[in-house]
Length: 247
Ligand code: PGA
Image (cartoon, rainbow, N blue to C red; front, side):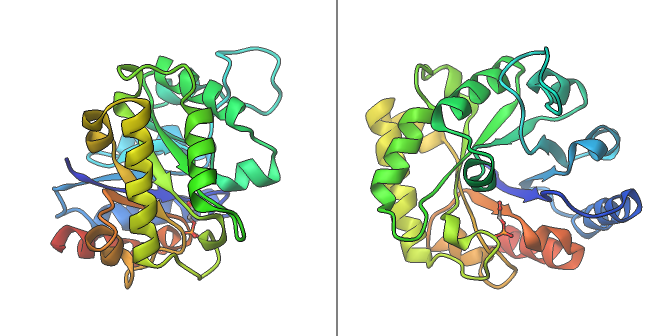
């Protein structure tokens, strides 16, 4: 299974010109990399244009609605993302859970919509400061995967992102990321099977940079990384990818 490196640009960069330049610079910086799956999740506005130029890079949305269409001002459906050329969609990101009130039920409906549109969901889970990691992970996984069969979730990606480590410069220690990884696999085994748990990629996110990236792959046994801030600097992001490809 190839390692996955996912860039979450969030609501950045500020102009189309900067976005286009960043995309081209990343493409250039990683053109010799073959053995990794690179996914860029830009704001919706640029998704279609990037998808046309992406070549080996995959494109993802940062969110989708649970309905296929209708009176939902400001929203975008999974089918629309898919038709625009996306292969992935990030769902349940902590910024949406905490600032926009997304619940596990809502995330569950969005995963179902994404799967129906043949998108690969990247389900974000993780505890906040002061919360018990095991309880939060179990609750979020059980809620988000409710009523989903083993067959339906075979293309799921799980991103472990402790909320306090996101956009904070305070990354998780590789040891605690390892215990979160093993615990996620344990829950997947309990809910589905060992086989499914083994083949579901778990990636780490939260203040990843070129210095700490390889630790999460080697010490935390992560299948990849979800990179926010550092994916907005082409040189740093390319370095993360190069370091992981050599690991
Ligand atoms: P960060 O963001 O790398 O800036 O901490 C990660 C994320 O939000 O997915």
